[in-house]
Length: 69
Image 1 (cartoon, rainbow, N blue to C red):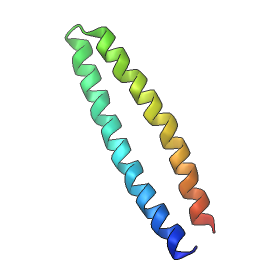
Image 2: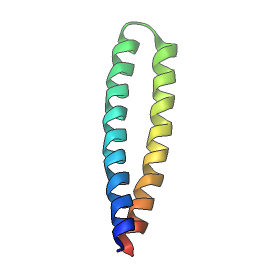
Image 3: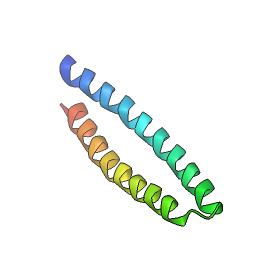
């Protein structure tokens, strides 16, 4: 792996870890909001989580490609 690819993979991995943390926080907030009756807001948060999950898969795939070289 080239130094450039390693640096990019490391940075992407850190961003992925941050994204997973943000996703966990959104999930907790969505649960809290739903328990208080704001189902529409909770559903919107769940939709945002689905986007984060989809993008996380793409980021993880790119990291694997970078680390294979």
